[in-house]
Image 1 (tube, rainbow, N blue to C red):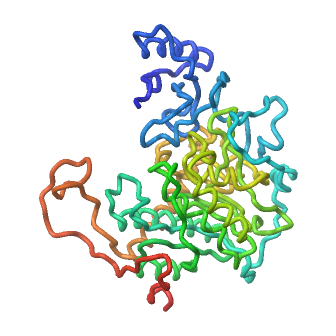
Image 2 (tube, rainbow, N blue to C red):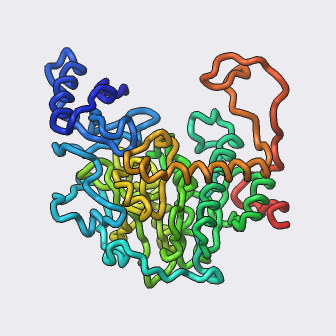
Length: 437
């Protein structure tokens, strides 16, 4: 499905932009005289021009960007920004701004949001950091190397996808070290494994876990989000009382050890964001979870269901979390901010975690630019690049048929660059020997 041409054309004020959008939407849908009733004008916080009106179809599928171009929900006729007025301390679901109208969930399943203690303190921390000696709590990443769940642009090359995720994971670990975390850091691995990479993670203080049961990808899963379901396996890690689960593509800007404290925050805890106001979503880039056999069993049941679980534009792990819990503790917006978050420059120092997905790397709001957050990101990127050189090459650049790099045209064939590292296959395999030295 093609995006509307209006996404590239309008740069006026909100009122003027809406009028221009309506005129151009009518032209775009010729020979129809006006846009379809199911189309809504919105401002997406996920890219495609931050303050540029775009045509959002409520049944929404935009190919590789399906999970980024968000709907306001069927029947909604709200206009204006997708993200309502907020600051990093905002808890817009449980403690909305005084002038914010109530949010709606379009009839889709969503757990009841409960203000966490952090929300009630106005986002202030007064943190009691968990002891690093406590084996019952940890920060957890997930590194999945299954060919069947790869995104299409890796061309079925597991090592390429692994290297991409590994660099992001290393960057996230370095960001945790920069804010002096005292919590144990663990990575849950599955699928193909590379001994030299795991050895380097161990050198960075990351423990490797490989003993969780496998997870089934549901039939309703989007091809884009199939790998996300590996995170559900965190529920099976019952040796932990609490886990702070982070996506590999996050950058921790402030210490988050307090999230492991039961006196600071109950579990489960998520940030409630907006797909596009007024429709909420759970942002799973950071989750505070309490593993249990009962929850793992329930999650497995949800994954086996063919109907009644997935939300029409959330065909990834988000639909599982939405159905798993009756209520969720809300964390302030600062725990899962985006480059596109409309924060003032003075607000960015209060952000704890930046979720930095690939399709938003080119996005810079004014506050983000003025706060010079990108300088910190570049510094961490450089350090991650240096660490990856210590790991060594995992695989040569992905290529398409006939030795042609995807999207690059023909190239001269030459000696294959790089070499494969020793590999262990399977979830149940023992950790690679090199990782335990």
